[in-house]
Image 1 (cartoon, rainbow, N blue to C red):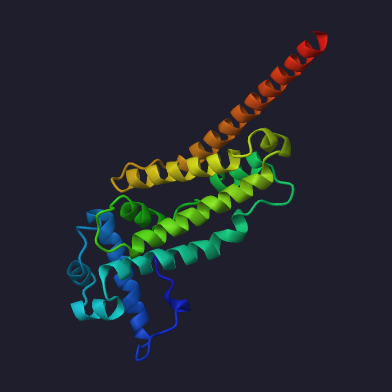
Image 2 (cartoon, one colour; image 1 turned 60 degrees about the horizontal axis):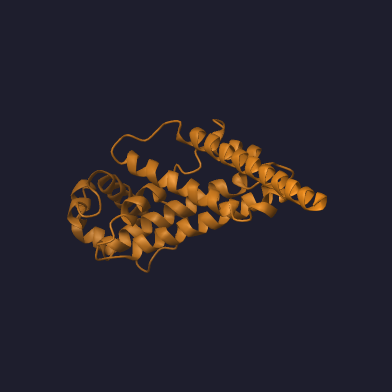
Length: 232
């Protein structure tokens, strides 16, 4: 489900039942674009598959671009409301504990299991589409998510590690989103990994472990260099 219509202010002259119609249009459009992509999805096809007059679709959404933008916005708002508080780092939580909890735990819903991400990735790779509102909206959301992950991991990674690798949180967040993009693209052809997030958590923990080893090796090298200079 992609709609958050219950919290939306109705337009002038809009009947209560219009919210259900709007939700049906959004659901149908997402299903079609998942199968046929941006170019293969038309307003006429949405109307036919939703069993609605074409005028009803255009009454709610003046263009396909605005329809897709609404899908991304409403799905993101719902996902954000459901996950924001739960996914924030807890007091005293380490990087490894945080990553395992939000990505690797089967008790929590999948971090990126949201319509807006799957749809956004499909749109973001189609740079030639004439309408850009929905694509730009997703890229803005994606950038906000990158910054949030960076902020979280700047707070959970050890200060001593950040002293030697201050860009590590940002590199980890970029890696996370790149992996999610790839899995979403694979999912559009039915090949996404069911245990993708557990694998992602393991990769992130391994990358931090490598960074710790590199930092330790760098520190030891500097100590040896200073000792050699002292002896000479």
